Image (cartoon, helix red, strand yellow):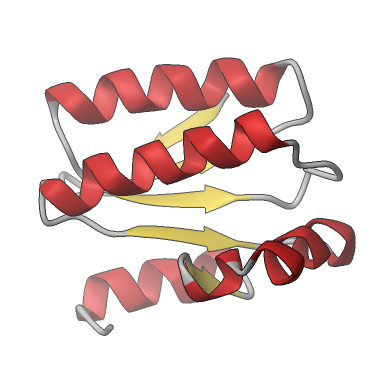
Length: 111
């Protein structure tokens, strides 16, 4: 996983296809339990999302919310966005078009 520490409070992860997706999210969740920070997940290289990946995303979201941190998903392609729409997750997750917008939202503290 390409993990970038954008600042002391923000980390950005570049997700990849399976099996890396699962491994990357598991590693990120472990790290966030120790030192929670705001997280930006870049989905630009992800073309498929399965139910176990959705469960991991929801768990990460819950972990971050309990620590008063935010999770922003960005650069979601049309196919994956369709999964979010069908499952109603577009109402659950905070989503932006690209990483620059996600980082700006976090730095400005907007909701």
